Image (cartoon, rainbow, N blue to C red; front, top):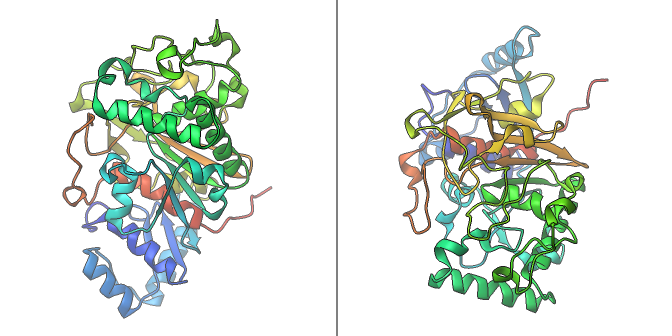
Length: 394
């Protein structure tokens, strides 16, 4: 999985998933040649690699033992993690949404990793319990329809989405979309606390935390929910209920395309040509989880924008790990935390290979970016639940 010899990093994850799905174990060699995978050798696996265009090397048992011995050396920042089971994947996304509207569905399809789509009805009826891994589409959990009001309130798609959301809320017994979305967020919170893994990108990250922090508080203006917001609602926000963010200030103007001070989109002063973020270096043997989530063939990853591009560094809770950052700009791009028995990862931005993805833009053709470092980070998260949990050293 290094930069020099792998022609298709993204499909390599699909091969690994496919192997796990055959009830075979795989070893993920953390920090060894870009985070390589050690698979059992068989004609079937070799043929599948050739069909999918994935580069591989056949090595002897002696060579494999030598590599594992090198990795186990205390002087090497490497580790071998056993992957045991293909995780069952759910993507939370509205019905009828085009697959290319979301980077995760695109890369799962490209890597040929199977997933199922679910939405509010399924979440509220506890379907999440069937899945090991959940991705949140770039959703707005606050009931403000993505704060698209100013630019798109007369657009046919906006009017239709609002109508559909209100109809679904009514069908499920809610008088407001914001109340329904809060209950969905609470179900997802409970799923993570119970041991699930949640991965979210773009506005699903901050709007999820904002919804949790505003339980019992009306933060929606009349154009969103038909009545006035609570007076002085900023003072009623409870940061103790969030996953990742704290001390943020909500954007109270409905005409501003922004949820809160968490997002750096409007505050960043970086030209596209120099917009990169750096992946942090962790100890593979002592911190295998963040090491796993940061496996890549480069430590420097191209930045990309979104409704929520990146996170204000000093509004991230102290117990949340920053795994990717732009230090000069004081922003975090890629963060991870533990909640109860489960885990969450938030990744800022919309599409790692489409710098300023806008409504109606054409889909990204991943055939053109088979070695994308930004997309690799998504797939690291997909495989993470497959890892055998090691007992913590005391």
